[in-house]
Image 1 (cartoon, protein in one colour):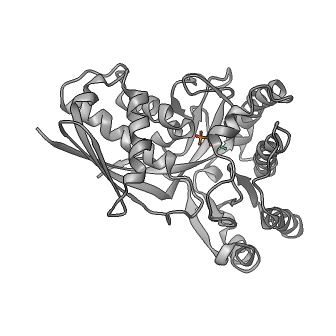
Image 2: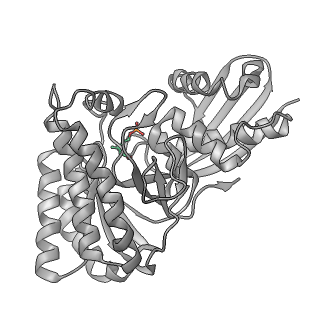
Length: 339
Ligand code: PMV
């Protein structure tokens, strides 16, 4: 019997960053992210008795993706041994331009994890984790840590930390505390500074946290930031929020610059953009800030209420600093949807 399942699943952007891990893909510190909306992947997976994997990306056969999916299936095999008896065809569409520098692993792997969980249930295999969304978060995590957070909308926590009840290293949960409405419709404009392949992969970066001279302090700091966020998120304290989130972004890159070997993923225009954002905030009082992931692109964050002043600034000042003036317009989203 052949069965097809489809999911649309979003990317996410971390506010407190996961950086450093231990086997099997467990985080060295807690993280929290905004789930995105426009940046998503749509995946249809067809399971039929047999062997092998076929992949299309945006309608084109993409054999170069087969090893990545093979590796993912290998990592989740112990929870889904039935997969060994199935041929898998994966048809996947990314809403954001391929090679835009936006990682598709969070959206792509969370979408595929949801398809695997649906298939397991349809074929009558019981799940190790009775909550199917949680099972998908565990599977996505085994593929790529940050993918575990794409299974839920809004603010999502991955990694055990004392101030977030229910938080866990093996899966993500929806942020359980009160959130001020100002954070419910946040914008994320991704200014594309460098659209090429990253010089150093996240996998290599995580590994460099082992033996990093600042590792212990960093992991402590992430817990402290999670604690501090509780009242910031509840009261809607935007200045404190932007200060903390920017500190996290610069800390992430500071860790890269102080690892052994050290490396730099920011480009000159990344810094120019960060400085322009801070200057604009000081001069106009607009609650706008930035975060970075492990790359040169800048995520520009502001509440919906600041859009009128922030968007002209993005178009007129930031876009000219981007590669081919490119930016993506996104906002906080509500999580995966079945297709
Ligand atoms: O999920 P990975 O292994 O690609 O690591 C992602 C790490 C950061 O994006 C830099 C931070 C995060 O928490 O998403």
